[in-house]
Length: 345
Image (tube, rainbow, N blue to C red):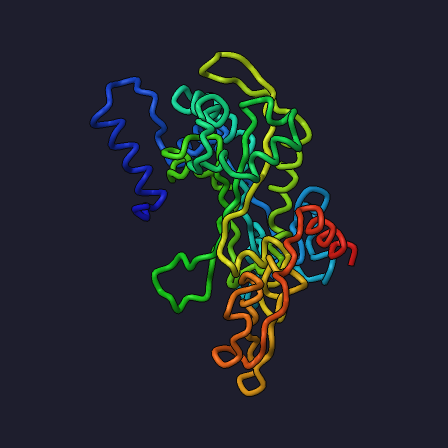
């Protein structure tokens, strides 16, 4: 946050050890040693190389490749030819690197801390079901999920997650063509006064890019999706500090949180063009204006009651009467089938 360099952090550690702490104090003496402590806590991250044009990740069985298996482009940065570059022997630098922070140890740490372990079952033990919406547990989606997956709901330790992602420009100069897309997970088991605090958010990925990853964000989300599948299908042995007992931990991703533009990238439904409304789906009513050449979304009177006076008001609208019914709301199964059809293409 203070933009310290690694060297200045090392200087601080040495000053603390030499001038303030007693002899024999167990304090890391360098930035590198401090990072090793964090790694032992399970808070390290994995560097995964990626192709600069978002074709693929050099991950798992593709980790040793030197070029993209789709377009054949090099994995490494190509330096400008010079006498020094030709004679210098050093480590190759990837054209793009994604940071992935494993989710499982971070969920386990929430239960291993006495300050948070008892609160991770608040959604099951202390929630008041009085019909008032105070927490995601009061939503129809949460209750429907419990009905569909009773075995998951029966274990109060199981974690429900929300995923948020968006891009921002990390530098002060707005002229710099660069963006970074953090992927953040929010555990919803916690009470409402704690669940949306910054220290509870779990950073899952950092995706750097000169531009937005766009629809190719699913390429970068592969490690997270695989780990979420493992947490859903296979239990993880976890210790609860409040009860001092082990339990089998599962996790499920219930929601995504994003603006309308990022919604297109995460859901696969285009938010541009004549079918831009994800709720109306294929029944979206839109027209293309002849002079401005832009798409215009009209026909909102169809949501009014059938006997509403505005349905027959020609003069105040587009010169027509509105006789249509509202678009049909599609179920989750229908949306899933649409996504399966797209994957088949």
